[in-house]
Image (tube, rainbow, N blue to C red; front, side, top):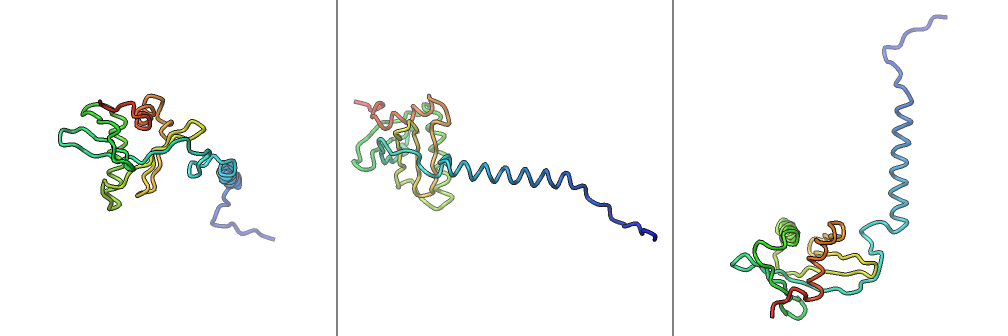
Length: 152
């Protein structure tokens, strides 16, 4: 009996098995994280306090933060201050413009019972977990819930 040589070389099975194992572990970890409530799409706690806030650009570069429910001024964010807050709002405003929305709909700032603080834009569906950016940056937004920055 003679064997004819195949023009194709057999692909080693080791790398295929390793790739399959890696994919299985990744899918399993994602499913486990979602099952344990780790997914950021689902709130893990009840809201402690929530406030609809509208941000209005001023001619001098300041940003006026208003309670959208009462139209009361919460605070004025002076030009050149609160860099993280300004950058976050700028990014969200850019997303709104791309989606065809204007600045009028308020954002929802929520403090959760488990200590998290989130900023949600209902027009685009974007939600920012503010604790991810450190205590100082989170505190810049937390002041908007307490009127701490309100001018007399």
